[in-house]
Image (cartoon, rainbow, N blue to C red; front, side, top):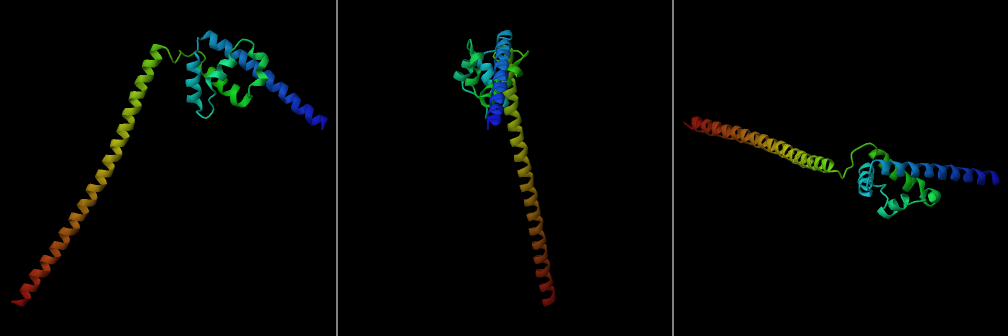
Length: 160
């Protein structure tokens, strides 16, 4: 039992040490590249929308002395998503820079246009299928009319 407890205790210490290292590294990257909280929040959402931490928790991570309180943060649910977002923003222009905002605007326009193009392609395919169906129906009716006309003329010729 003591052996199992010491194993859990050693795992906790290792995880706490890792959390402290990651918090220090995140702080350095944030400072060096002037990354904002908004940048980190957007990047967390982009990476995995199910693993976004709240803005208040994010601010607690970056407070002075937070490394010593690393055990108060859930490693998997808080530290890892924040760390992945900050590391992903490492050496990239800030998403809130004018260039990035303009680029994001163009990307959004292209995305909307692509969605509209996809919708129009689907509509064209549907209409093509409908036209082909109607052409087949016209052919079928033309053949039926021809048969009926032939029968009608055959009946009149046999009467004479």
